Amino acid sequence: MVTIHNLCKTYKTAKGAVPVLQNIDLHIEKGDIFGIIGFSGAGKSTLIRCLNRLEEPDTGSIVIGDKVMTGLNERELRIARQKIGMIFQQFNLFDAKTVFQNVAFPLEVAGHPKTYIHQRVREILDLVQLGDKANVYPFQLSGGQKQRVGIARALVNEPDLLLSDEATSALDPQTTYSILELLKEINRQLNLTILLITHELDVLQHLCRNMAVLEGGRIVETGNVEQFFLQP
Ligand code: ADP
Ligand code: ADP
Image (cartoon, rainbow, N blue to C red; front, side, top):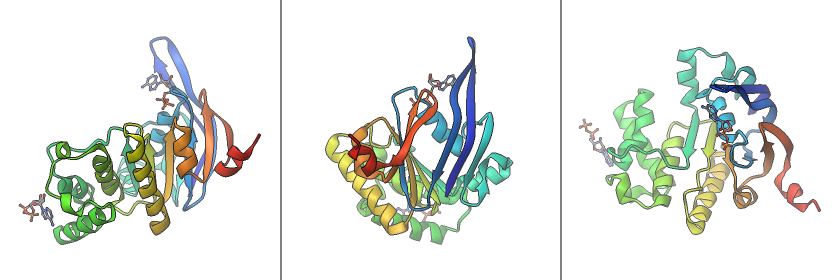
């Protein structure tokens, strides 16, 4: 589903070129929940942002499904991005839009007809158990509810891949647990591939089947989560 080969990324700063990702190789199977764990500054955000080309990698290739992301022009990229959902630590909702409007937004951008949008938004809000919150604004929601809106918006276009950037880091443990359970359920129901980054071992252990450890811009370990934690 996702294959990253020899990905390198350098930031150019006043002090010169700083290598942030070095020779990243990763393969993620369809339907997997794959976690990338690492300390702050390891390069996790940069890596996940390279996947949908919010960052331009210097070298290397990224293939998602049947699309060579690193070979797309702007127009092709806009279309490809519609099939990659993303959720964020700070939810990134539109404060001036209702829950309904937040979730409808990607469908409007994709140019779907109104009747389809109404039906699809209803359906996806039910999936994240927010069917009764369609007409409220983000400020009226708890953190967990906001992230459910984020998840609904990420899923509404039926993506092939869901990217999660520390999606539970701003939530308390109990809410974190319920969001992780929701992601598991979505993975099970839709066979949706999920790639997440986290600095929390608990999140990895609870949610992921496979994992990689990122340290100083390099992958230093990769494997099955259960086996990893069984090791002495
Ligand atoms: P993580 O998500 O693991 O915390 P990041 O990908 O955010 O790591 O950052 C990796 C390294 O790249 C850090 O040292 C960070 O300071 C640096 N960095 C991130 N973004 C930029 C940028 N736009 N310009 C220069 N350096 C950056
Ligand atoms: P308009 O032509 O004014 O956009 P719509 O019927 O599309 O009229 O809807 C207006 C607003 O009402 C939408 O922007 C949306 O926020 C809200 N809305 C529409 N349908 C629903 C619905 N099924 N549930 C909740 N809110 C809805």
